[in-house]
Amino acid sequence: MAFESLSDRLQSAISGIGSGGQITEADLRQMMREIRLALLEADVNFQVVRQFVRDVNERALGADVLESLSPAQQVLKIVDEELTELMGGEQVPLNISKQPPTVIMMAGLQGAGKTTTVGKLANYLKNNGNHRPLLVAGDVYRPAAIDQLETIGEQLNFPVYSMGTDVSPVKIAQDAVEHAKMQGNDVVIIDTAGRLHVDDALMDELSQIKTAVNPDDILLTVDAMTGQDATNVAEAFNNTLDISGVIITKLDGDTRGGAALSIRAVTQKPIKFTGQGEQMDALEPFYPDRMASRILGMGDMMTLIEKAQQDFDEKKAEEMAERIKDNTFDFNDFLDQMDQINKMGPLQNLIKLIPGMNKMPGLDDLDLDNKDMDRVKAIIYSMTPEERENPDVISQSRRRRIAAGSGNDLQKVNQMISQFNQTRQFMNEMSHGKTGRMEKMMRQVEQMGGGQGGFPGMGEQQLPGMFQEADPETLKSNRKERDKQRRLKRALRRRR
Image (cartoon, rainbow, N blue to C red; front, side, top):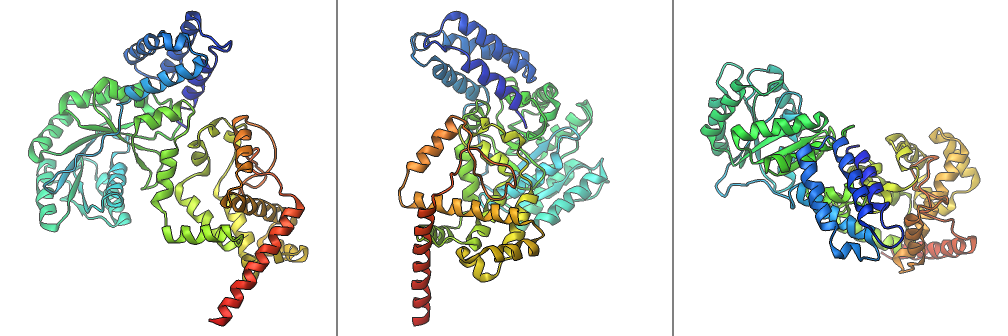
């Protein structure tokens, strides 16, 4: 993942100072040396590194830090604020025209993921503003680009405007804008030609398109995997086109992240989006403050909340809350929750958005792929409707039948049911305001402690200290309460 090496180095440099309760100028010099090396190894532009280190050092030498009882926290705050400022300070949205259609011109070299990003951006605009985008096939030099865009348009159910390979890209762009006006498309996204490297012919053509359609946004797509070259490309395109923003792709790959830290400082143009995956919904608005928090290991709860809200069903959530409170949460509800989590993305990535969780021992070794979830689903689907609705009826003989039906051994079934019961017990206690367990859990997370327990679906792999086994008497008491609730519900249904 991007930034992980940089994140480790920066956190190590900051946490190593002021261990005695005070901080000296010698401590700061050593820390700044480590920060400088970490940024350079992350392929951040040298001039950017020099200015960043100078700014942090000037602030860190202030009396507030030198006299602080928690200098590491003070320095962390300074580095966080300077990183945020380095990457632009605040999120910059798209320039949506008051007079439709909004015209967005995409630019970039071959291989940066420009055509795929056109589809991702269109999908984002549909889901965030209910826009009606028109995709324009303006790369006439690479027939595969037209085919690729048409495939993406068909996949997402968006119209694609194409005039083949024998028409000038400038005319295609002009005609596409007029077509959008007649058809009611309020956004036009133009996919332009790329090259393996920057050349005069490419820049001249892009300049002509810009003059012809006067785009509201000129977005440059750069590949984070190219490191320092991405910054050079951005500078070259900006000098010619005066771009309005940047989209960084492949930020989820094995990249050192230097592009995200350099581009804003070099071009003075904002990073508007980042692409982190192959799926058409893998495009996120770029928030400098959130990215700084991720780099410094402080999590990103706002992004996690937004991911959850994208598929939030308020009515279903209220029903689920009542079932948790009544202690009638069953395996059918559990399946619904698994589906919701899957929609939010890989579980490893979600966990790392929680403050403090990125340093949990063993997290990077977790292999939370779909096979784990599929195994759990196979076990649940092998249950009878009665067993799914009332997990407490699942005896040992029933567990053996479920194991045989799902293709799992008895131990796997026992483990999954045990984890389910622990999770259900935990949620019920939280819904009734019993916060002692949550406080204990958070202390364990902060201490990166050991312990057993985990989330169902992780197979043999455990997240340390998350859940402790409920005592037998508590489980017995809750089981009686659940049975009572179910008898009342059945009686009400019969009366109706």
